[in-house]
Length: 73
Image (cartoon, rainbow, N blue to C red):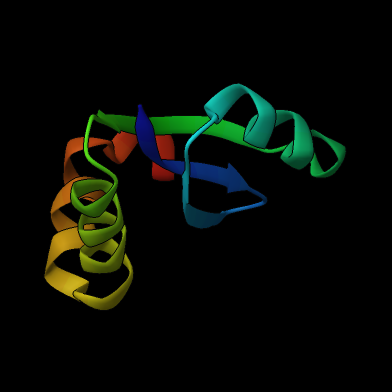
């Protein structure tokens, strides 16, 4: 499985991609982030494309933030 994820720390969000979500969260743990959202994909290309859309297209991340409004406040 491949994952895109959104973590939050001090009113900032970070979007990432990994093939091992548990390992990646442990790596981030030193910075004490909160995992607020993730999506799982079987295909690596699908996960990478979704990550790029979230990072590059403002409208895409805005829609996601609307869905997760309580987590981004």
